[in-house]
Length: 241
Ligand code: DC
Image (cartoon, rainbow, N blue to C red; front, side, top):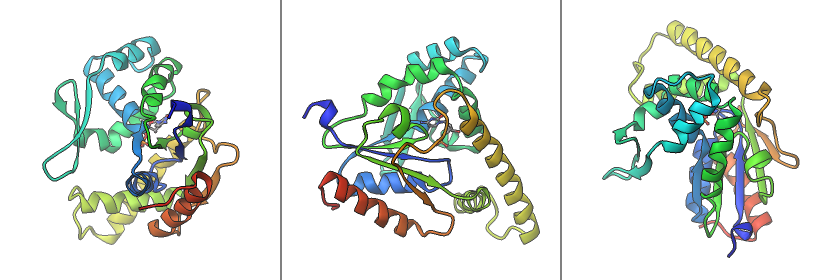
């Protein structure tokens, strides 16, 4: 199989739209590799911060990204483990703060160009599920399957605060009025980040032409998975495990 014939399933959309869960399940059931492109921007931001590089200096941030030593692995329970320059950053990389920093460095054309080859190198037989913002538009425009997920900022904020409770980072019995206030604040942050991701000049967050667009605000994750699985099976002529 030459690289050009290795199938790609490109899943784009903002964070909290259900992309991460969908991509992991698709990769599992088709036995494909998974590219978490957001993690590359998150790691680049953490590396730039550690080196004291200003986020407006595109060439310097790109140079840091070129030199960073990243390893994606799993701990003894099979849970994700990410190391950056010898330091375990598994939890830091997923923090809201890190997502915000990632969105800031993601506007830099030098960094985006630097990360193109890394992303192309993830395309391995028998196939790739690519999770990001510009998978179907810029990185893999030839992808056989393109999907664009959305969900309202309010719904995404609710999912995020629920996740924080599950992770024990917020009390499970948080007072309903405090919970509402917190969810509203998270929704505002989400709107701000969406605006930056959507309106940036370089590879903005927009649906690729021909992408299946799904609003997951009131769709259970299982229904999203079923619909995208059926599309992949039809387009790629393969069967889910
Ligand atoms: O998907 P995520 O939340 O891990 O992404 C973090 C940030 O990285 C997001 O705000 C925008 C940026 N990003 C990007 O610009 N292009 C991608 N392909 C993936 C992420």
